[in-house]
Image (cartoon, rainbow, N blue to C red; front, side):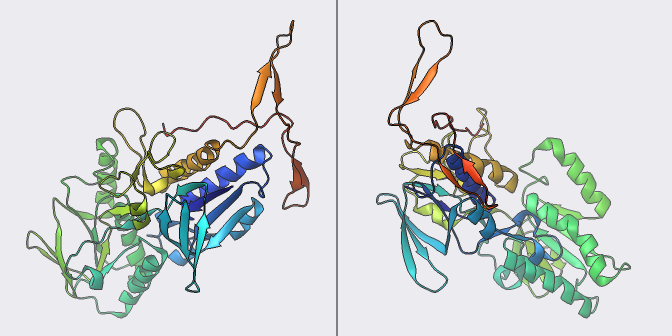
Amino acid sequence: MRLVIIGAGFAGMYAALSAARLRDIHGVLPEELEIALVAPQPTLVVRPRLYEPKPETLTAPLLDVLKSIDVVYVQGSAESVDTKSRMVQVATAKGTRKTLSYDRLVVATGSRLFRPNIPGLAEHGFSVDSLDDAVALDKHLHSLANRPAVNGRDTVVVAGGGFTGIEAATEMPARLREILGRNATPRVIIVERNTAIAPDMGESPRAVIEDALRKLGVETRLGACVASLDESGVTLVSGEHIETETVVWAAGIRAAPLSQQIPAERDNFGRLLVDRDLRVPGVAGVFATGDAARAACDDEGNYALMSCQHATRMGAFAGNNALRAWTLVRPVRCSRPAGSARWRWSVTSPRRPSRRSTPSGSTRRGPSVPPRWPPPIRSM
């Protein structure tokens, strides 16, 4: 039997850790239940911090971690999913393709920056969506020191006033002073189409955010939209033109395209609708997690945000519940002998506890009690 996890971000990594832990707790051998993780690289990119200097350092290797918990790493990009035959097609770095069958699937493909068809955005816009994007922005910022202090050289426009936009904007004054000198007078402007900053965070934290922006000298243009970009700067729909050589696009994200191949309902962000166990309703054997899933946080209509803070816990839940959904253990029967206050558990066709080597060379025994999966972890 095989559990396939697509994605090595926070949700995918935690799904693998959680599933491997549950498998180990109940003495199921990797040869009986394979856990495979599919990703282009065995690397965790610390995406929430890519707005910081030296983004190339914000990665962590995963290969040794996966080996130590007996998770098989499959290098490549998942190109297609056939939920009827339960097959995933993977494109390898060498240009070949392989097909991977699954019994249970966890879709942890994350999200991508939403880039609308705005004139000049592709040519003149930067982002911190991926490691490569963040490295390109960092190089661009350092190149400003070699340019004359004219034409908005010291001005940065950040399009989007959500999580990423606020983080990128509040980091910019210090980054620019570090590059251009302490006497530089950087100007940072957030352009947000909503009438309030941090529209998804609610009113409670907004006053704190607004106060922090004022103290850092970060300006805002609320209820404003970007119409176009060119070499001279940004033009807003209102007609205002802001001279700048640096535009950071952070105006929203969408679920990665692979989620479109799952025949199920999705929300406006492309996230798969899931139940409280993070199953995709109507699609047998498929779970979704992290930014790929629209998961309820309560019964009042609140849903998990597309953030790594939510992804870590959702990933752990999905990995646990994907294995919990399997009938891997033999039936457990209970009885209570006459005159005894204790219940006695027995397993039909009992399995001997497993004993296998750990990475340190020591041995580890499986449980001495009948293996029983715990109840699924729910998303609220």
